Image (cartoon, rainbow, N blue to C red; front, side, top):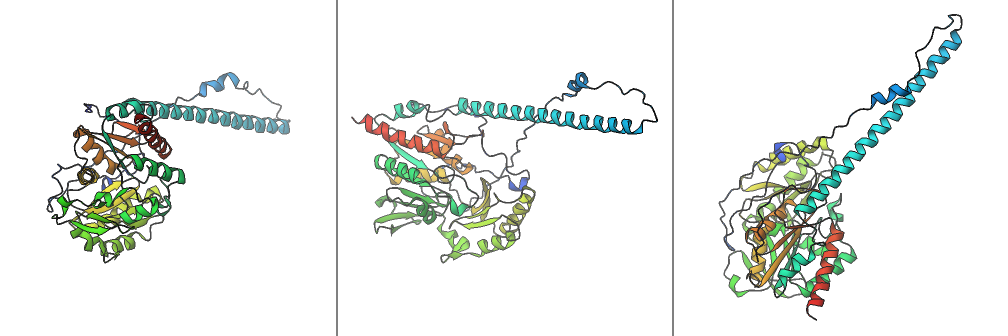
Length: 417
């Protein structure tokens, strides 16, 4: 099966949220080297140009000519009252006509914008077909294979909300995830802390990876017992599991003794006077949310964050959906987490397994890239607007994600009859 594609295209996403280079960071994928990594590797951060939407409309002033009143004729200078009344009426007519013209212009602009959005949405579907409409293209190559399912959380299983503490998934979505996990090995890989995403989901049938894959809980495997970053632990049900934390040496710097560290406190203090800014501790990374910050203050948020991390050369800054994230400088990301989970679940044989990763964020691109370059699975981008992606297919929103999960269950049931 050949899943390679030689196209890269613009796919819709959030509008470029920042227009200053201080906020432009990328999540470059580094070569995978198994469960080990270089602790001295520092990542470079290229800049990106923000897109500009330029809509031009022609004015319609010539439409006024046909409806303009005739020139005013000479008046009797003794008839001052009549002259004044006529002037007032004429000015009132001009105001009304201008307002009508303004409405027409605004309607025209609105129509152009709607047409542009429909065109971009159509382009998204051409380059990244709907995973629902193209369901057979996904499942036909999966016949005789085991599907392994990987899911992001925010924006994929739950809607993006103003308050990150209120990103609850619906009961219907929880039921859909529970059902799909009964048929396919399923894992959630989130930027949230592992404990926090588990609280949101509340399902024991899944594997969980938090902090962008830097905190993975999976089944016990003897082959990982000798790894320095892998320890035996127990889950919430008392079941023995392997806990893999490739950034464990950074824990005292970011999350010390189960309490926010100096890094977290410095970020919180530096941004506390910026209205709408929120600092979230995600164990192996600290997230600074600016979704509720006035756009004119975005560069202030970025500068304050940079002022803190410049004192910590072993930390780096990455950018998600209206969030800046302070993370350890290590060769690890969601793509590495997918590879590790496939190995720990004994599903790393591409000839027998079809991995599917569903996500909406820039950090999910690392996982998309691993599947595309490895020619072994499908990435599905959750977005209604175009952006550049390594995914193969797309879904508009969490509602479509839920429909896709349900379709997988129906397909599995019918394919085994």
